[in-house]
Length: 316
Image (cartoon, rainbow, N blue to C red; front, side, top):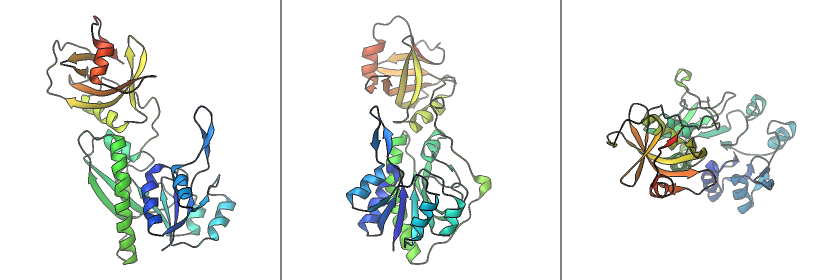
């Protein structure tokens, strides 16, 4: 079986390594090198790094839907094109040219969370399970027939970074299962129920800002879903500095001394840091990062910002 692999982000890295190890892929399509960082040096995609390591042929079109790309693909022989976080829309013309050969690996239980941020959104919503779905691609985003779907549980305080890594590895198991079932002619297509579809949005800087009038549970889920990157944030006053909260835990039953505080007030108790949220509940803050500084734990935050202060610190 020969597979053409398309991907750009590191989410598809383990899948590509698996395909290479099983001699299934010779050619990789990934996005062009792009300037990055202060020096604006060209940076290659994680998928290209793997392709170079294994001496695979690399194709980096500026436009995957261009005539050049069409002509390139027409000359190749393959059974599937497997797409994992490629980062560009595939045109209807290109999809139809290789009808039923386009396979997408998506990190959600479709039809939930179509779009580019499915792992973040399952955490935002406090879901208890997620998974990997393999679909046959069509012209609509993440709407093709389901070829295989597998679930995993989400852990209580699991962050985006932790769940991302687990799903990245889990995708290899699901891909392996899919290829085995395909070879045995055991794949049964299931049409997605569009009435149950939900969609994710782009994670803007403003979206990542925390509003402490919201419930502690809602804020906890948002912090989890944005950690470690891009990071949920608020403004620390009176310092007027941006502060990211990278890890927190719910303490709904925790009794805080002098609990007549407004939302956003930071309190210290027994070398632990709490913040008042909506509904009268508190979040315990475990890992924080003030702009321009390293990540610190609660004890370090207390020593650096809370000890011997007469005025309250507040996040807003």
